[in-house]
Image (cartoon, rainbow, N blue to C red; front, side, top):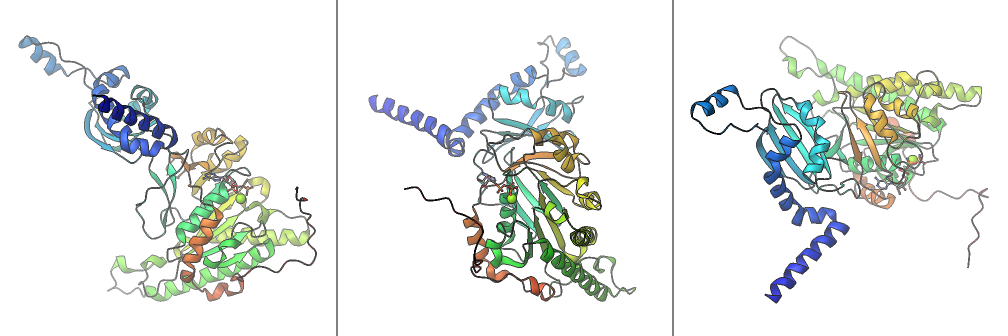
Amino acid sequence: MNWLAVVLLLVVAAAVVLRWRRPAWYWMSFGVTLAVVRVLFRYASVMDACGLTVPPPRWRLTLARLTNRPVPRPRAPRVLRVRPTRTGLALKLKLRPGQDAFDVAASCDRLRHSFAMYGVTSRELRSGVVEVRMTGYDVLKRVQMPAKTDTRPMRVPVALREDGAVHYRDYRAVPHALTIGATESGKSVYQRNLVAGLAPMNVALVGIDCKQGVELFPLARRFSALADNPDTAADLLDALVSYMEDVYQLIRAEQRITSDVPDAEIASDIWDLPAGLRPVPVVVMVDEVAELALFATKAEEKRRDQIITALARLAQLGRAAGIYLEVCGQRFGSELGKGITMLRAQLTGRTAHRVNDESSANMAFADIAPDAVLAAIQIPTDMPGVAITGDATGGWARIRAPHTSLRQAVNTCNRYADLTPDLPALAPFRPVLGIPAPKDAPAVESIPATV
Ligand SMILES: Nc1ncnc2c1ncn2[C@@H]1O[C@H](COP(=O)(O)OP(=O)(O)OP(=O)(O)O)[C@@H](O)[C@H]1O
Ligand SMILES: [Mg+2]
């Protein structure tokens, strides 16, 4: 008996410690079973209390009256499936006549409290069927990506959503994207995750990092071309535009439209070309984009116009040539001059890290998901990396990328360095490897060491 009490005490203590220190392990060991039992036991009464039941149909009332049986109770949506996940539970519900998906969405907060879960979201799977996703703990606090993700070419599992699902950056579905956020909000870490995710894929990486290359140059071994200042960036973008024109010439040459070529085989982008002929897709990473649009002199203004025109052309025409843009910056609005809003309109994927004012959030979401604007301003300063991501369908979600350190990203890029394609068109911009020679007399003074 004593032994039993000791073992029980140890199990309870282990559960408490795990829940406090390692919520993910607690969920997989104890939490999931307790939550399934709790949800199944309380389901009918919670749905009733949350207003998610409908009165029984008339024929059942009549039948009960005729057979002198008790009046049937109101009915909750039928549970089609309860699926435990790595981070919570997923319930598939069949709605009763008269209910709609909005009823469930509007009750999510009440369901969260009633089932004692950390978060509850819902989405319509098909007409009359809704999925309710519950999370058992704050999955964004310490992001752990699942070991197995659904990887496809040009699709990077880059972050975790607050409902526990993986957020993918899919370049073929959303070719160009804009990421904005205040300083120290996590933009570069997000971009670093993308680079690390793309490194093992058959893709050419091109980087423009106007912070003198501090973010992207350490990853140089996996980059086919890099620019660390606006002058080089202007030349690099021009070279990319002519590369794009060459790719279109290749596609034209391969089209050979004759009456006996089936419709589905006519190539209109690089993915329709035979694998042996297909040019390698190119992802262009731009960090601190505003630096490219600022100017102080007449000559710089000319360079700025050249850069913005090249970026706008790549955004408008690049997709079919397999050129994808990933643009990051603190702000990206019309105050940066002409051509910016036109370029922004082409960047379909939108992600906003913490921003300090509504107008910055508006730059990302006002034209696609207005209610995401409020969510972006509410991200707390002590959660760098948390972001709101929207898409052209009007939906949005809160996400956070794992904290990949520069060292981890460098290791990944070095491991896959032999996959770096040599694009002759971009050869002059191929980064020179090795430690850069120090300038003769750096005008930087170090902090004196304290003893
Ligand atoms: N996903 C994350 N999880 C945990 N910490 C993060 C995450 N992303 C960023 N951080 C923390 O925030 C710090 C700043 O991140 P980052 O350099 O990406 O910001 P930034 O938005 O690029 O800033 P800046 O505009 O000044 O370049 C990082 O050093 C890191 O400590
Ligand atoms: Mg940065």
